[in-house]
Amino acid sequence: MKIAIGVCEKINGICTTMGCFKAYNNKEKHFEEYKNISTELVSFFTCDICSKNTKENIENISKKLKEFEVERLHLGVCVVKCKANILEEIKEVFTKNNIEVIEGTH
Image 1 (cartoon, helix red, strand yellow):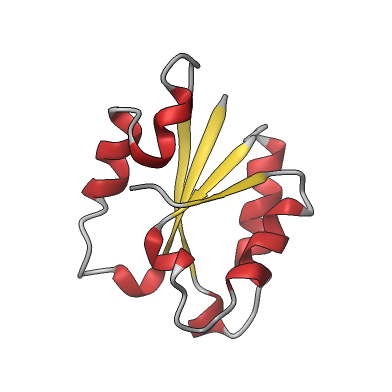
Image 2 (cartoon, helix red, strand yellow; image 1 turned 30 degrees about the vertical axis):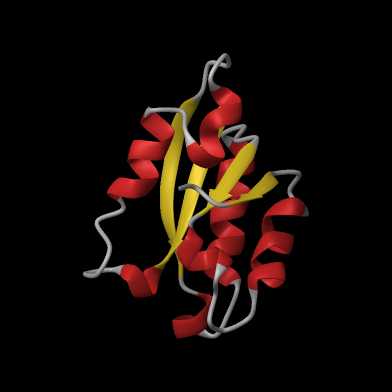
């Protein structure tokens, strides 16, 4: 199963993203359900809706993920707790391309 992780661009320079990778590599926290499933982390990207004031970039990312047959997207806690209150809007971009969205990584 191909998996992607999306985080908020505002964590750049603040967060190491090691928590996301540790949880994925150890199949723990929100990745625990994959303990007995072969997975491949194929994308790690940032959401920039707030700074660009448009969904165009993540819509393009969503299309590329679908073309590469990504089945699930895990959103980091930084996106889940989006201060702009657009979590549902972000999720919709991916679900309309039949990518299941999981709220959380670690």
